[in-house]
Length: 136
Image (cartoon, rainbow, N blue to C red; front, side):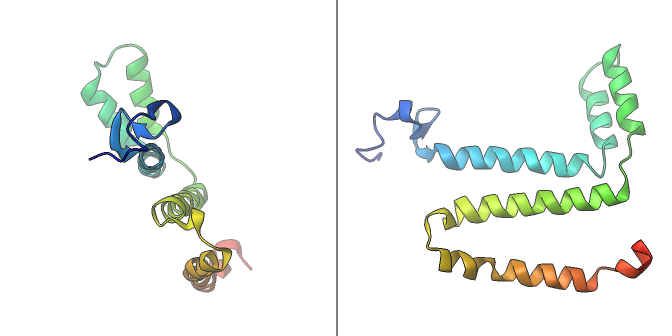
């Protein structure tokens, strides 16, 4: 049963698609997470999307040139690694901020929640083979 506050407030963004029990903010975060996941799949393997377009759309004109371009597209390894790390951090922030409700917590609780992240950054920097990659 919908609460009294949520019944008639679709114009203010309370419900999503006129469904009271689905909060608008959570659905938009879910959409952003889905889009970022598609981008995370595209960056290391763009030829997957070329095969997908080839299966779904008829191979005529611009679609054929798009699939050819996607099959030949390759990103630099450093770009792939850095962009996947950045996308993962953005998705982690979205989940923590909205689904773990850190947006409404005190700063001290946010610092406690971020402590494992700080530890993982130091661990990653310590393990990453900087000497062989950059010649340091």
